[in-house]
Length: 297
Image (cartoon, rainbow, N blue to C red; front, side, top):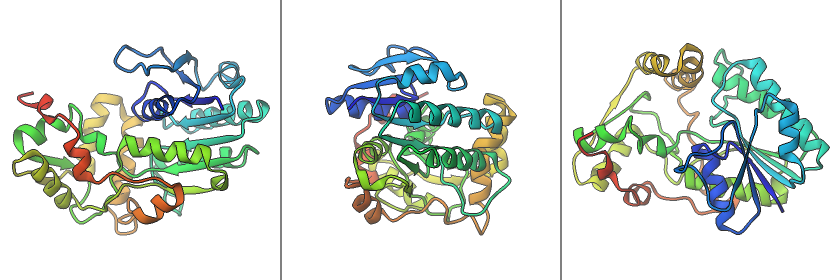
């Protein structure tokens, strides 16, 4: 079983490629650029190409039996549709036995005005209707976003956990490691074909409850500060441009509404039962990391 990991040099795809390689499975990575030394996964050869180029996608799928697809952080509808159609066509022509697609977001039942939701909804539909057995994973928010140059220094140095979600909203925070476990399970479990799974972590936590976990783990008081989604989007626009900022921040605008408040919840027991995995408690995830790398930054 050779597994293609699309997005193998990114954080989510890299976690999937790493776990597959650790299990001794043949893995081929696909990315726009070759991995830098810090993102290379031992045992994984990465071929470069563009999801928008049908020929390079088809070559990447040659000889592959299963594939993990992480949709890139792109929010132009025509571009995302082209990506999904190229993947669907190549997988179908190569006789791929299973696709697992991760759009890196939950998607509301009802249609919305937010490109971050609707481009992922359409990509999922294309792949689920491709004729290739497909499972769609919809994660909430990644814990690993907090172990980063953006959030890490504030947590360690200032005791501040700032995030653009109201303090009453519960989130099933998920680690990249648990995402990888879920993806590998979906790649190898036959009865999950055709399913769309609201993936989530071991606990449903409000912002203040998550801050309590960090207080215990870091040995200092951590306060949760909810950021207005508009402020969050403005900061993203400076870093990534307005289109990407709107795509990313749209979900936070939605979660701040009454109808969107439960979008990031899930049933941990159901996730574990469906996928046959054990989810990692937040306290264990915090304890496994060297938070002092962010000290005095």
